[in-house]
Every structure is written in C-alpha cells, then in structure tokens.
Image (cartoon, rainbow, N blue to C red):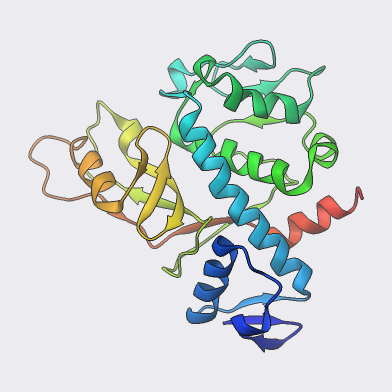
Length: 248
C-alpha cells in the first residue's frame, strides 16, 4: 500500500512516473501488505530515484573489474585512499569524495574488498547519482569504506519482512559455513526483482545459483543449506533527502 499525506494512492494516480523500473517498484509497493508512507510525492520520487540508481551502481560495480577478497587482503588505489590496518579505505584529506568513489568504477582492478564493503560502495554511488557531486562532496567529506559502517548522513536501517523491492539490500545466510572460509558465512546482495541479485564475489545471479555457490562453502558433511533471509537493509530515504536538501 502507498500513502501520500495519509491518503492511499494507486499506481494509476502516479501517471507522471513513466520509467519502467520505477513503475514496477510502484506496482509492487501497491500490491504488498506493507505500507509505504510519504508526506509528499517528492519523497516517493526521491526513493524511486535512489532505488533505480542503486541498481545502476550495482551493475556498474559488477563490470568494474574490482576483485573480491577478505579484509586482510583488501587493497585500493593509493592515489585516493589510505588502506587501514582493518582492511577499510579512508579517503585522503585532499581528495574529492565523488572523484574517489567513481575511481572504483574507473580503475576497478586497483581495488579488492569483501561483499559488505561492496554494498557500501553501491549505496554511496547511488547517493552520488541521486544528489549530485556538489552535495555529495559536502556530505561525505572524510568518506570511510568498511563493512557496514555508514556515514551518519546516509542512515541505514533493517526490517524483517519479505516485501522485497528492487533496490533493496538483501542477505543470503550460510549457517554451516566452512570455518576456514568465514567470509562465506553470508552474501549481501542488491535485489533487482524477478529473482536477480548482485553480490560482490558472485556477480549477478538468481537465488538458486547463489545458494548453490554458498553451499559449496559449507563445513564437511553439512546438511543445512544456505538460504535467503527475511531481512531487508534500506537507506532511510526520507531522512537522507532532508539532509541533502539542507545544502541546496
């Protein structure tokens, strides 16, 4: 269900939104039992923009040539980033956040990281595409890429449900992962809809292929399969929009 200013809105009422990906998201929102509530249509349109940009960024990162590795062996382009002892990447003080994050797409072979950092990169790229370079550089000065540690200006929350929408971050759990390969205890993915997911290290696959891949990373003689969790990670779109609007 979609509500704008406390009124239920149907997809047919949103005729100005013609982009196929955005129209599909609206259709799913209207069909789900969850309520997607907004004060203004601008809030809804911003979320749709951010979601489609999340999928765009995931496709681009998939093609970038950036490698998968553990935090121990992570590396980055030293022109823009300082590689910290924990495997995180900290923006150098003199560098533009927007230029540095785009360099991951431009020079992907100079980067390697694990899947949670990959998701962070995707969401920061989506933020850049959604608000533009000037605002991005103001909000994310001192950008830090590491696991699930997000800047306070890009707040993230989680909800347990299965009303998945394209642009959501979802999670495949691997409960019996091989202790020698703990980095395969899970795979964090961007959902495209229609049983398609992007995860750094597995590429763009359907759920069965990702589960099959993770099952090959289990402890010997395990009988517990990997599975897609009922857990969604999302940016707080409305809060982020307010934060970015401050600089307009």
